[in-house]
Image 1 (cartoon, rainbow over the protein chains, first blue to last red):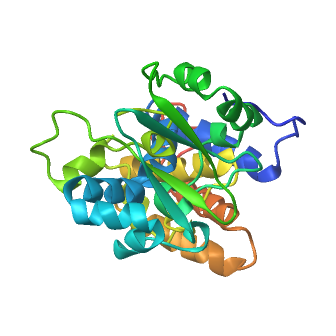
Image 2 (tube, chains in turn cyan, yellow; image 1 turned 180 degrees about the vertical axis):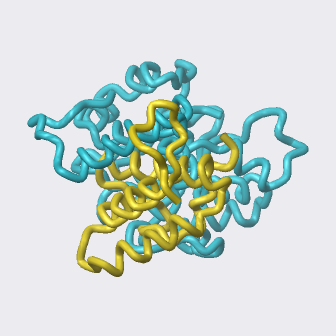
Length: 197
Length: 92
């Protein structure tokens, strides 16, 4: 779903300098294949959402915490030290066998930064924002998240006032895992609601 | 690719704990620095850190990732020429 901007602007001087550095370092054999993509991916999609993953792992292990989390997301998330301007009013919605929650921002790209990091590019895309409201089941299936036909899908529209976090279902076979191990199982997409675990 | 996160402890611009990249070239130059630190300096990030400090001090109003680029250029400029097709002899 990546798209370039509408106007292909010529590279700025600093972009040219970075391209020159990349060419030089590649020639010297200092950049392994795929290294740049790997680093970028790790920073943008794994390190950011770790805060949210810790919240989810705690909720899976501690029923009292989960109760507080669903009752007052902002306060329970703050218990773990996370919060800030983009996480003022957090509402946590729980996935179950019969209910699947998914988060969108129809107006712009409101997103709970303190727990999920930077929003992925597709989250800001107009097709995602429009179709998740109009035909969530079809769009979820296209994104690789096929739901049973009888599952109810609840779409939550984020705003400047309220940010949503999905509490995914704990996967089978994780009974023996520690909290830290569980946090590694939780993906960003599962906390937006576009993936199952 | 195990040591590539050794730049994590540098003072990177963060917003709510997340690294901030506003354009692809920024994440590219970040990764390039990580590669140089890992592969040319065996994970020692101090030489790059010193260059970054110097680059920021030289022009405090310059956007952060431009200073980062300047620092990396300076660091790479000081590397010995290892490639076979080097044009000129390295002096040290």
